[in-house]
Image (cartoon, rainbow, N blue to C red; front, side, top):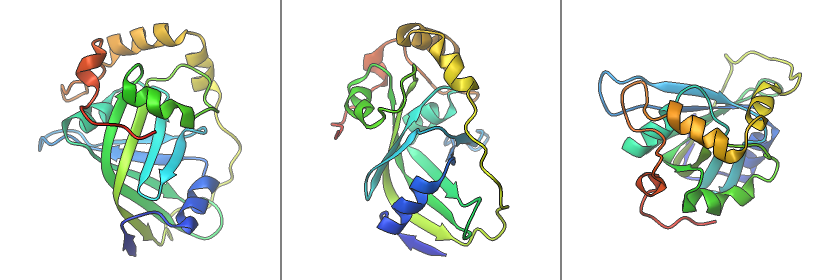
Length: 194
């Protein structure tokens, strides 16, 4: 196992070769629920050796947004399903930028491949990068991305998509605030680099 504080060119190449990644977050409450979500499509971008982001295409829950608003802790994990075994974990402090906020607007340009309505962008400032063996990860063949999420999101305008998401994603399963109808209430008070 190897720890560093930033991404190397080797890490970047590995990430760019992966078709999916996982995101984990948790509330501060001892009885709160840990959330682990798989992500795909072209939704992940490396913005620097200590900064990454992914575009949030939506889902049934709002756990990551809620956890980041409460405490900022996040882990993003990539693992090799082909070739040499490897697990790469990116630990850091995340910020959830809801659609319509200045933070979202500043980061949206990094995701030109995503041309459907989205919920937000998760930005992560890395404080630790961990490489580990991945010997227990199975070998699997990639057949392609599923089309259902893209088709589902494309049925609505961005505004109609967000209105529905705000109505259904107001709070996490633990009762933490999720999406906000009042954009001012959900954007952290910090300057966002583009």
